[in-house]
Length: 233
Image (cartoon, rainbow, N blue to C red; front, side, top):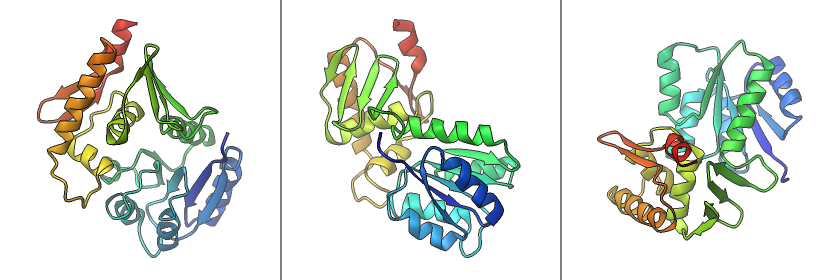
């Protein structure tokens, strides 16, 4: 299995050292004690996951995350770890692109569980570098999709679109989120391209299987429903 790299951005040195110690059991760790340095490190694009505090010197965690998602178009999983525990804080974090949110104080075991879950969901943790949801198996190394034993012919952004859904099962994904994730926040491509790729993906699924797990939620977005897969099992 390839070596994993986790970036820890936390200004409490004692806590940062503790995080470094027990996350070091599953990955190589790098620690930064301020937001500006942490943001620069994250831009290197080498990290499989980031544990990010919000109340940081130089640049706060919200701004770091916003810059990564909108300016650098980085998609590595980010787990916010903070003492800010209001609903508004959490909603704001997720709106900016956080993948998970854990408040201090926390249990070591819960943080490890959440980190491992994010690494598995993003395909970064696993000997064969595959994602599996129901009968769908996606090999991220050779970019091959198999469903019910049949290979699904997808390439380019069509493959990336299915991966995005498989990485986020039973989660509402808006058209804007798909566009930003696949084409980039500042792309000059028209957002209508999402509908074109969605239509093409559905056609490919129909050709290969009777399963149609991608549901359209009118005026909201799309969802890859695992319940639809269970019904066919």
